Image (tube, rainbow, N blue to C red; front, side, top):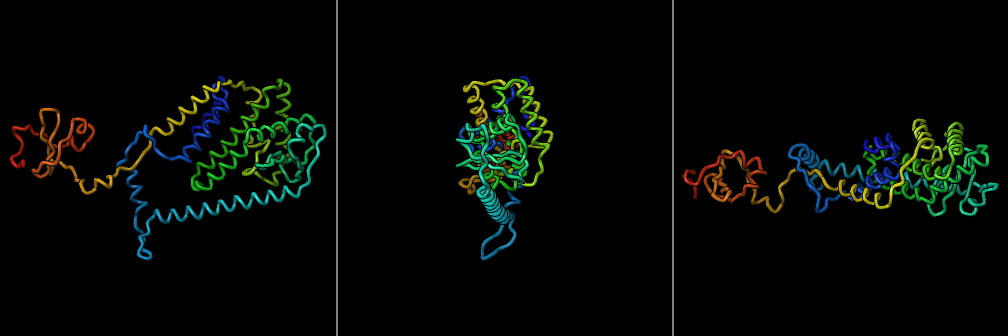
Length: 356
């Protein structure tokens, strides 16, 4: 996957940063939400693969109540049922977590008035890692781990950045998109990569004002949480975990924190990347070859057995079928159509006698 490749070269010479990867995240979601072609879009017509796929979808299975049932109808029914089930599961699990959080008492943190005055905190014994959850009133959930004051400050700053960056809105919105595209395995792979990019972005923001020694302390806090994870309760779909990811992803974050020196791109540069990305992602589409409905009655098959061309003086050709004149085609049309190029070309003075 292209984004995974970019992740592998993040901070290589400071070129690929989490901001660039975030742009790719939004471009991916943009194309999912707006799968349309625009005026500048180049259409590549498929004459073999896509038409075969289209024929498969339109294959008639049975007739019910005088209505034809095709493969596409069955697939749409499965898609609709799957989307409803996915939406129900998403909503049900969210309400369960919300109810669980509601009955958990608030936790007062010493010497953290700057956070306490803005956000609520709760201790959840079953939790494996600090997380932030909720849209209107975000709540920071902490596992029952003995953190030092400095470690707690790193954790709270990290979670506060998630809140100020509206990362939860992005995460929840993507879960809604998955409700629609639940059948696509790439969606789940992309969700994992998207969460990883968001964590990288948050790390980069947090360490901007930290010394190298403080970066090491921050990494040690990540490792401490990772080592104490008991994985009794997971909220990955609804929250951002402080120590998110697999062991390899955590090592990747650690290297990025200690060695990363991301370049600060200007707003104009980032905007240019966005516009270029939107243009490139919408510039080419693939479509099956088809005859427009308004031309169906006028259409005919061009073959060398029934058709031939008569070359005119102005670089045009008269097209004949069974000796009857049909139309005039231009040199450009001849160059772009392989069927025309297979036809026999006569000069005006020696064309077949059956011209009408």
